[in-house]
Length: 159
Image 1: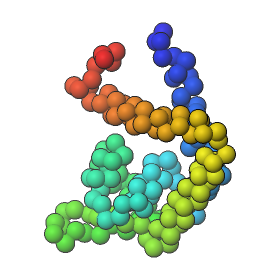
Image 2: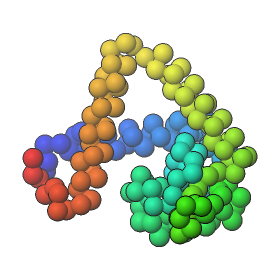
Image 3: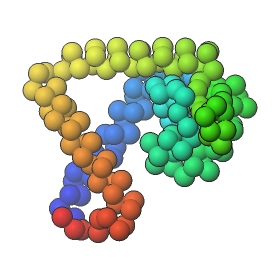
Image 4: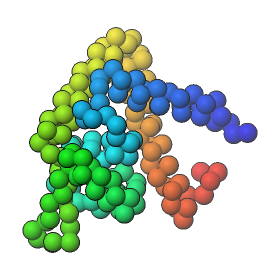
């Protein structure tokens, strides 16, 4: 048993709860909320950073490019995403949301920011500072998890 078991047991449900609660309270990024989690991630990422190639989206989300291509095809068919050919390199597809999907994603992002700001305002200042430090730590944790996905860089249990 790892010394981190209590933290792991608290961290996993807390992260999931924050994500689910924020989505429920602030609303979905798209009107048609039957998207899979991966589809929703692609919509949110492309909405924040339009005109990105599929390969960049795949890298940012830690997914295989062929997986993202499949997701993109489904989102294009649903009328949420547009795949344009890069004029400089016709092999590269650049992704953007359709105007209505971009509008929905922008509105959802604004609602989430408002909901988060109100929730943070309701916390005690020391709790806000703990969250501020926690965000930095979560970023470092995400980097370690990314490295763990590349076994040649990190060995489990190594420090």
